Length: 91
Image (cartoon, rainbow, N blue to C red; front, side, top):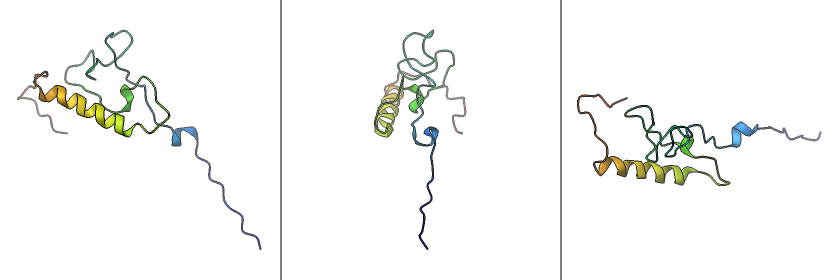
């Protein structure tokens, strides 16, 4: 009896890195986040996952995503962001 290999198919959504759903830029009419990944229209909302990318490259975006999160964190730590001490920032 000959064994047959089972072929499993993964659709494009299973292998692609999703990006570009919350693009960043200086112009609120063409982007939802500013250059520091803060929402143009909402206070205290920062997005640092791959949705800020305008599009995805040919390689895994993990390191670029982490580098951007550190960049945005630096923006916080240098005093550029006013944090309301009366707001509970825990999830």
